[in-house]
Image (cartoon, rainbow, N blue to C red; front, side, top):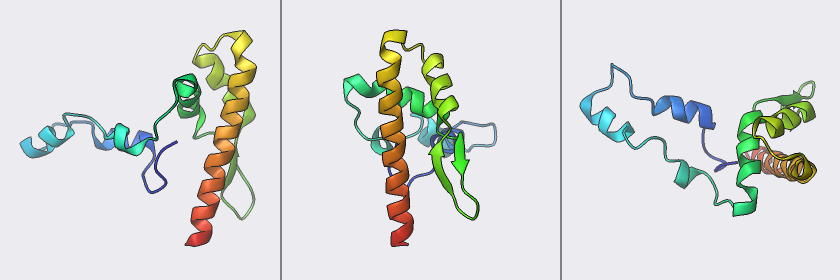
Length: 116
């Protein structure tokens, strides 16, 4: 999850990738990498693994006809939890946290869309 007025993490990381066509000024600006610390919210230590899992499945969306995304696919969440090597005894809690996080993000996105 990141600031609501930002581009997605993958696009931002690609924009900060130094390429052969970059000027010296551009290379210097990109040298520190993307500004993740100012974009992403502070995460409590117990939720860092869940945030990592969210980053692995945040583009696996469920869309409704004539609308935008409404949720993240549950099987993608499950796969993300496995990919993050979350121990089996912690997986259920991580899955619930991941569901709560994704619901909150979609709620914020809907509120923002309603304001526009």
